[in-house]
Length: 235
Image (cartoon, rainbow, N blue to C red):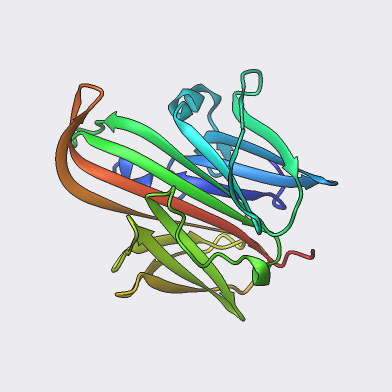
């Protein structure tokens, strides 16, 4: 794993594991670190302090995008079989965002009803004042938007093009503080930022809807998304 200077994105799998806390939940991570005029992007599946190489096959349906001021474009992040992770280098243009979505298919754990799981994620990179993260991405089913406002970040949760009201956002600060934010009727919650470093948060929603995918029946649809950003970027 990179030192704490890295930026990471998580697609939360928290609700899949019954009773899992933020510390014990599994995630699909994207980490990025600047190397001169390049950004090294790495992605794998596991926990916040290290992913499990044996679980990389759960990410076979992952797609990545790079967003710059010029717009959104597909990002090729191939699987590195030796390192058991997805890895790529991209030009270090600021600000930018790295986005992803991953279809985990139908799973059934802990005796619960079979569920079709889908995840999206985003990592904001560069000065907070220049994020320009103000509109939902059509390629993502669920998303958290972030706007920096002096001493806090305004988070807006979206699901299928609509604000996600009364949603519980799980958040962790650079100091390790874990809090829960609840969105209002417009899908908005505010997170006070009081220390430099990497902030991580995620939110999810469940829809009771039966169906079948790849000949596997399911009874619910679950969408989760994670957003990671850095405050105090010196650039």
